[in-house]
Length: 120
Image (cartoon, rainbow, N blue to C red):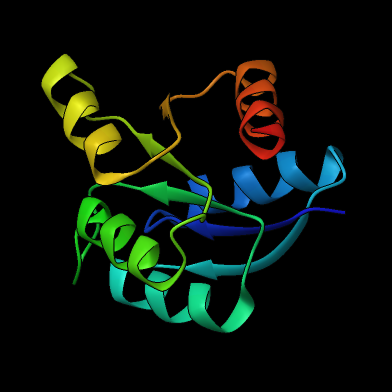
């Protein structure tokens, strides 16, 4: 069972992600509410995948992606954001995210993105 870290400052979105992941047999090993906590939990939990919100308190998601990749350059991170633009996508991908999912997310698309990312 693949271990997933959810990084999301919205409790309702975090709960929705946890429910979807549990239904699709992924193990949620932790939840972070800000970018600093995300980096700390990544280091402690060593998840197979991190779902990273971008607009967060304390440390922006893009900075957290960069910091996680300094810990493990093979980390698989999917950015999850409502703040979509082609420029923002380029910035997120340049930071090292493997994929981008736009909120509100479509569950089948999210699961396919997760499976594709884990398989890469």
